[in-house]
Image (cartoon, rainbow, N blue to C red):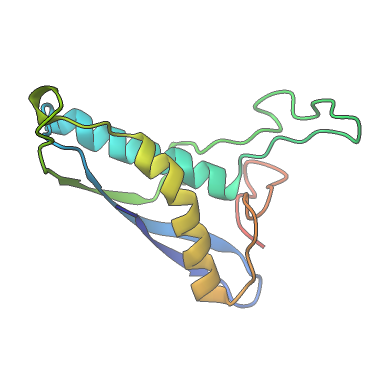
Length: 143
């Protein structure tokens, strides 16, 4: 199942912020519902980081230029929008306790949801993520 992202885009500056992401995933049987919701939220937040800030840079010969968290930005607590986890349960008959994997789905699909929301809101052509590599942690907006 795919997440749905809501973004605000400033028409004058092109800056964007993620307002909300709703993420639904079929986890089979939720043995620990609180942990399942935590996996959905955590995977979604990591995916938002991929969509907006996380970028590994290499030079022309392939040497790593991104050497630490000073130049490889990840979402902090202040960067996290409202994330609404929706746990869908369809127990798998062939797996232990009917449970399925959880956590990977939101991580993979939320960057695309953020990029699609920015495209829909701005009309911008988006062909890669991160949408913009921020220069500093105070400047974490898409332009």
